[in-house]
Amino acid sequence: MVKKLLSVLGGEAVSPPPVWLMRQAGRYLPEYRALRANAKDFVAFCLNPEQATEVTLQPVRRFGLDAAILFADILLVPHALGQKLWFAEGEGPRLEPVRARAAISGLHYDSARLEPVMQTIRNVRAAMAADARMADATLIGFAGAPWTVASYMIEGKGGTDHETIRALAWKEPESFALLMDILVDATSRYLIAQGDAGAEALQLFESWAGTVPAGLFEVAVLKPTARIVANVKAAHPGLPVIGFPRAAGSWLARYAAETGIDGVGVDQMTDIGAIMLDNPKIALQGNLDPVLLLAGGDAMRGEAARIVESMRGRPFIFNLGHGVMQPTPPEHVADLIAAIRTT
Ligand code: CP3
Image (cartoon, rainbow, N blue to C red; front, side, top):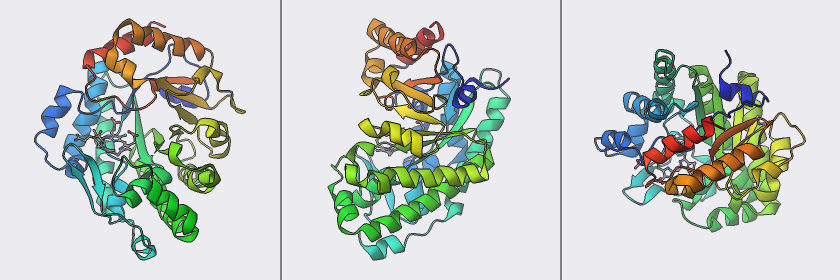
């Protein structure tokens, strides 16, 4: 039997659609908070295969989701490139910014630093195969896409308008191109290693596609993404890749047509049922507003049903338009999945 999520990424319509949620593992789950409380340092937590395996499996076990997403973080790639990374409690990620050409040239990818992630993947696959409740779930590996990762590397934190990286990309195109090359190479190697270890699908998070000026979209998003997908496919021809260019707006069609991805993640601002791609085999994934999952109840169920209905007959994976919000009651996730399974 082909797993549901993989059928959809192969271009088939499946009803009811498979479902997983971005940030399905995390602080809204009490069992996550219990494990996280013992690990002060978030990077060490991600790089502990026993803990990362357990946290990856927690939501799959609890809710019977159609996919597990590897527990890790997009900022592990800058960490493996030698950039100093830490998570300030309650404030999010902090990195020692790389801004000068010399700092960019000094980045070198050390794959050994991410070897624990590969062990997590092997552990998760073994645990899922051995448990009847999870045997049909697909393990999704992931990485951040170059623009999104570079924005943290250059800004040094989240929550800015990305003025520093935009200025660098416009004023020092060669330095920016060098950083994109370094990230294409590191991200390709990281994702290929995830495929070697047993990831069954991959997602590239372009969470900050919405801050890319139009005149830079090709060099910052389309081309680097296409190069990564081509590298991954050269090593693993059958491994599907989902791209999530959040807030890409009018760029979505070109993103789907030019990057080689098998599925596109769609944010909650976009009318998913109205998206018409040249290639109807490309799966769409999304796009419930995370605020509705937080709210729960009939409003959530009604909107979920409307989304499923608007995608009927097309290859579709149910998800949110962005990650699960921290105060979300876990019961709402169970309600949502039950509602989707009866559509
Ligand atoms: O369940 C899953 O989705 C798997 C694990 C996962 C995490 N981060 C764990 C995490 C995934 C896929 C990510 C991706 C990620 N990380 C993105 C892209 C997706 C998105 O949300 O747009 C980004 C931009 C990051 C960078 C990052 N990591 C930020 C901005 C933060 C701080 C914000 C926050 O929610 O705390 C993190 C930390 C982080 N990554 C946490 C988790 C569970 C919380 C850390 C904690 O437990 O203290």
